[in-house]
Image 1: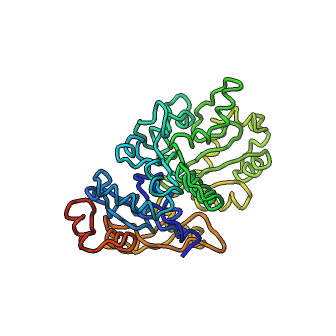
Image 2: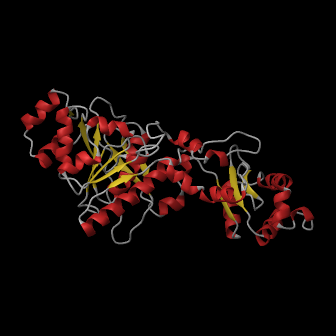
Image 3: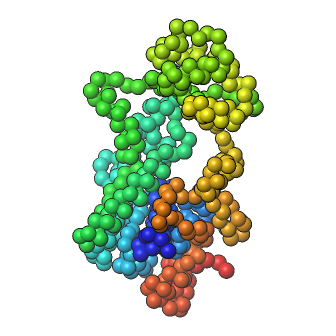
Length: 391
């Protein structure tokens, strides 16, 4: 059970943004039915699939067949939300638009998450995180002076759209609870990132200024960046944002240039960033990244060792807080996962079920929700309309 245990969601999404939005709601008890094409195998060893689809039920269903479309409409009639992230033409081709769904469930909430929205010049463009980053201005801010734009490496627009999607669905559900009315949510993957760089857009519209790419540094503070440490591929981020912090760091470094006018103020340190970064790097490379992190943090200077994936899994702070969770995956054994970042004191996320195998719950769902007999289910399976998990 959980705070969303009375909510049923039909999940037609793929890749990352949509699946993550619904995984968040599934963690808090929503019944999320992951609808997959029975012709497309599920990669059981994929970390992405297993991370994004935990706590969901799996139903394999052909939406491009009349019988499959009707089954989806039947499920819509007893559900609260339908969500998809195809290009707009796909749901039109299936005859499964919001208008179609409303005919069977007037108060249904439908969320569409295409790359560039449900209408407009780019509406039918395919979209993945890196292409969206470049087309929305995010990449123009990332990179090194004189170098090309860079992408984030984590498809940043996807998790951002997931957060927006989860919030939008909760708002729509609350609206329906108050008014009895469903609605359509048009959530473009590309628009969230633009909101995150709004200050730069406003600055350009007012003064025509375009920020330069400055790597790991900060336009107003120095030293502020990532510096080498003693072992191979050991690094630390150090962020000094005041003269007082610089005085503390300078003392810790044993720097004899305390009266050096180049470093006397934030503005002068920024102007002489290259010399300052070299000075800090020559000092940091003599230290272990984790030990130096502890030292700097104890002096109220923001710092953090750059850790890799396995180091994060073993991080004592994360594990003391119980953030990492263990899930027993069929055929794979117990694997460790990041938990739920949102902690509710009275209704925490408690479900820890593995991602479904292809068609794992097809028979159970069609029987329990639509009262279909085993004979009917087997007939649909024989005709390729649905998929059943192989025993």
